[in-house]
Figure (spheres, rainbow, N blue to C red):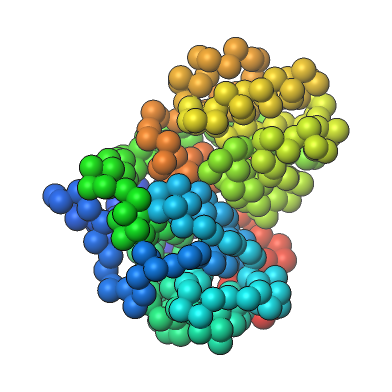
Length: 365
Ligand code: F6R
């Protein structure tokens, strides 16, 4: 049932404040200002020397965001790879170490195979899955569910933001176990997490302007997405979402990589979507925006009012997100990124719920 929405994808984008809130309630003790995991862990974060993450597609990008969180909050080194590579790399994995797999369906063949490989190496496996009865959920040593509810649209939206929510809670739990954050810092992070559903609702109010912007994007043959820090994987996710439902060629790049190649593509025909909350690396991203502007590139900034006031460049459009704690930015910024792809594809008359050549669950490799 699509409710009042034209497509499942629209419905699922709009459900995010609710399902992220529900997921949070499952992982956070609001009164105490602490993360409380729904399952006991069969391993100790404090004893891990590293964490291996594996997943496919959008779930892999959630893992890339989580790498920043685990490394910064828990000082836990992370290695991450797409599951189709991880399963055949024969990477040495430490016995009693931890492999974290992320999957909406819990049935993705490569993700399952890389989890089985980790198991064969004597590792603990922790799965972040949306379907609790799935094979990955059943075979992992411990399951941390995302409570997104059934996701029907082929392009993953609400499962992604719920994955990010669970992963940030896990990084906080790891930080506490490893003694890298104290109770006050944990409370600060939990307080920031609690604001997320409201901030996502606010982000959804930008839909009208994004719909207008989407008409510009729909004229492009190529679109470049740039970001730094956790906004880098968000750039990858933005590009994936756009290409899979609108069939416009899109690439996500770490903003600092621009001058190592992709800058050659920049001209007035290529919209450059810059994902840049006013965080610790914002100024660095502005210098990349200047490089784009100097070559006639048309910038779309997904940022906040503080950043918009500071950069001083002409933009094609600015999508202004609410002020927030930079740690939780990826969860909130998922909303405009999804809406850009959605409205571009709808404007172009594409079937956003059933994009060509794609299956919801990839159970063969
Ligand atoms: C993109 C998308 C895919 C999936 C990928 C993994 O919008 O939906 O990239 O994220 O196929 O699927 P799961 O999460 O079911 O393992």
